[in-house]
Image 1 (cartoon, rainbow, N blue to C red):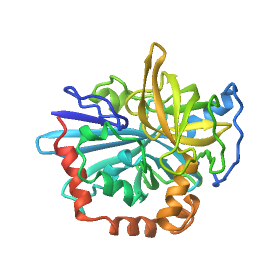
Image 2 (spheres, helix red, strand yellow):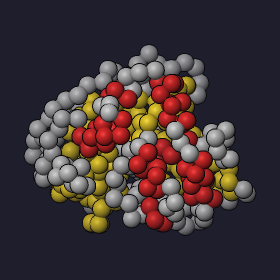
Image 3 (tube, rainbow, N blue to C red):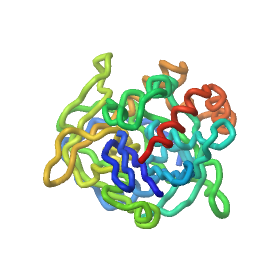
Image 4 (cartoon, one colour):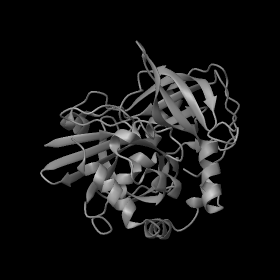
Amino acid sequence: MKNLLLGIIGSCAVVCITWYPATASAVISVQNESSRAVSVADEKKIQDATVNLYCRTKVGNKEVSSTGSGVLIDSRGIILTNAHVAQYFLLNGKDSKLTANCSVRTGSPAKTSYKAEVLYMPKSWLTENASKSTKEFSKSTGENDFAILYISDAEKGELPEQFPTLALGILVQLKKDDAATVAGYPAGSLKFNDVRNKLKFLSASTTITTTQSFQSGTVDLISLSPSKVASAGVSGGPVVSSSTVIGLATTMGTSKKKEGASLRAITVPYIDRVVRAETGLSLMSIYSTDLSNRAATTRAGLSAKMFTAIEKRLRATR
């Protein structure tokens, strides 16, 4: 039996689809224009920096796969994505009973290119979601749902000297009706083997319809107008304005129209605030250090309960 979990919240059939739901780094302050056409050059830059995160795990007599999206934000191969997408990269068979065969895929259709490790994941997300079932994830707000990976090795050959990237809009000011582009690897109704072999990059123009705050009155979550990208698998994909990442697609919205469904995205300024609150460091400082040591420290801080919870969700997949 082959099952599939996809980043952003959806439904399960014979193939289970669950939708939970950058060269040198740069920080850019952007005031978004109300409308702006995305140039061919911008589109290419977005595609080059957007990746597919794909995992396959043997669970008893079945194989469970997960697929989501992410964005390169540093030339050393740093990827920003959702925690619910990145969690399966933690299953290495040493700290966990299950071993996930995870890869970073690029291109369109997506092809296996690199291996990656978890550099940072909010303990708040892991703690809050340790006992949640896959079904309960469908009610997620997106709070604390982000993670940082780093590309540790190439599947074939050597790693490039630099990866294509998009800058982070840590100082961006967002408001209703701002224009943006949302991108990723939506799988929609693709079946198991099609996701493995035919998954394509997709982007679409959108606008911010509402802004929300989790607690502080800041813009932490944005809702986006319906688009063709809004389907299973786009979780962790970048929301971009002026070649700058302003947010990560995280959960499905409530609007479903002919032109597509709506999305909600957590903002980059929000992600930076959470990292500062948990670590005392800025988002960029997390990956401005020895990457392998940072990844080892992150893994060492995870409890057996957290690994068990991730495995339990995979075992429960039908």
